[in-house]
Image 1 (cartoon, rainbow, N blue to C red):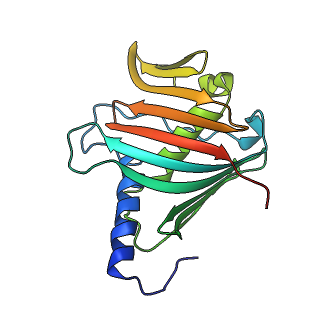
Image 2 (image 1 turned 180 degrees about the vertical axis):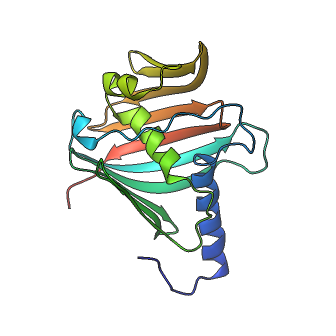
Length: 197
């Protein structure tokens, strides 16, 4: 449901900042030589779920574009039935995504820029949370994903395109560093287990 509440100048700036953050991890450069493969793996393939996380996402552009690091708060729920993500700016929900393995349902705040690409967000979450073998099986032939310990590298024709480092434990607190060279952004996810209500 899209909010129709009147939004003040401060709220607009906050929502614009959240939009910049989400679009940084969701928008590719204007004329990429190649694009990363879309990944829509079924939640039933997830290991170690259910998992409910409170996260702080911080994105920084790598292409020399203007702007400092942008932050947004996220609630992420993973189960074998669905992935659910709610993004917040200034204590207001700006994005809701639900992926059940068949359909990606999205609700967006009217101020959220159209450039925010939820398919790319789902792809990045898949690369972080889904089992290695399931992702490898879904990748096109020219792409490879390898893992050593808690690090993953996505490459094409031997060139590393995306790197993921995971520190900590999802059941307490964890930190993810994702560096996407092709789409020119670095994403840091600070994650804590959500306390039961």
